[in-house]
Length: 95
Image 1 (cartoon, one colour):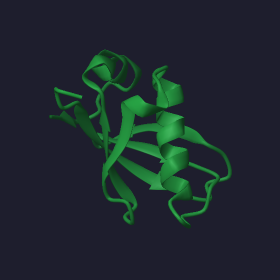
Image 2 (cartoon, rainbow, N blue to C red):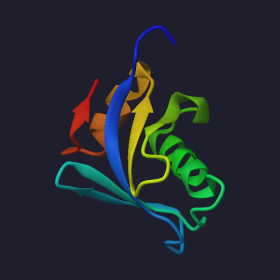
Image 3 (cartoon, rainbow, N blue to C red):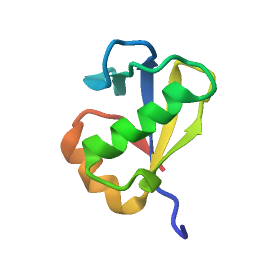
Image 4 (cartoon, helix red, strand yellow):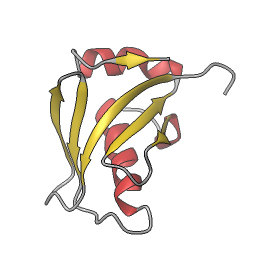
């Protein structure tokens, strides 16, 4: 990947019953996954969920920070920026 993608924050709730995005609050995406926060399972579930929500390949979404924190930094490829803006207006984004 030559150009860095778009970054945004996600507040993740592991063991949240089901995998879903709850929306944007205070510029941060809120999501929950059924997976527990063990051995990276919740992080992997989050990446799969976001890729599915955006309609992009799983490889276009990466965990860029916060692997052990509730608030994660997610990076998506540059070609997915439009999908992020359309899907979650009000989301604070950075490069």
